[in-house]
Amino acid sequence: MTKKTPMDSTSDERVTNNTLRHQYRVLDDDEKAQMSAIKDAGLALLGEISRLGNSRETSIARTKVEEAVMWACKDITS
Image (cartoon, rainbow, N blue to C red; front, side, top):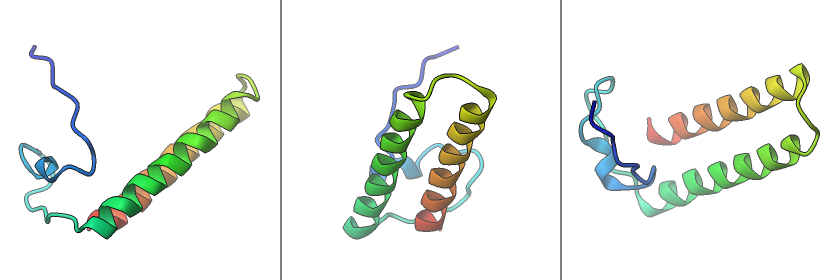
């Protein structure tokens, strides 16, 4: 198995080699900034949640933050 190199989620190259979406559109600079800001906010919240420790509740909270970031970014890219 070949190792994939990471790609910046705001890169215009994200439109290549994706098996699920058949069409992409290139994001404008404002959309790229929005996506980056949402991901930064999600990362900050995950950091705060991780300070609480490991419990079922914090695990659920982390999952929900990740899900919220995913759906917000999906809206931007749609």
